[in-house]
Length: 155
Image 1 (spheres, rainbow, N blue to C red):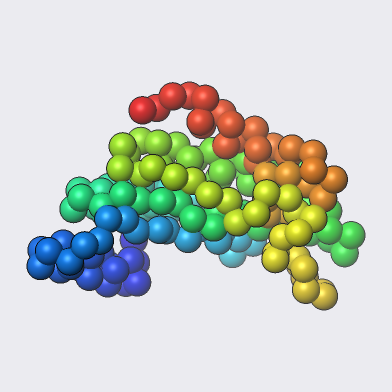
Image 2 (image 1 turned 135 degrees about the horizontal axis):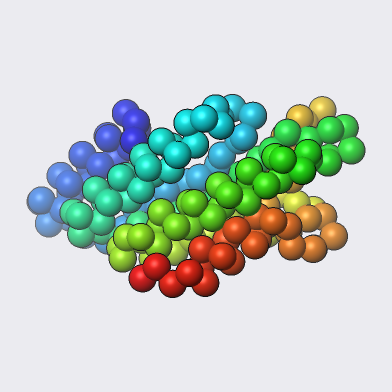
């Protein structure tokens, strides 16, 4: 919930009210742990859930699009274990937020392997390892976080 999402919400309500055919909204989710105050994580997830709720209440579907959760990495592209655990929790909570609203009908990551991710692909990057699979196509805790949410069957 912020001025940008408020403006999009107002536009969607206006369109729906005038009969303009709009059936859905995509919420991009490029999240960076280094910019995130970990103590506000619960509030941020609650805000995402509230945003999903208000869009679905006006009759549009919501898709989580371009989901990635970048973590701080060292010069070798390696993240600290505690950041990887927090990343998994964020993936799980975002999926839980979507699944708690029947009108949220899709969750799409912005790629699936860190090997080809746009995050960390530039020289001197301090962020990376943002996707559910590592550079060797092995699932990371982020994958397990998503899987846990999807298997919980919140619907």
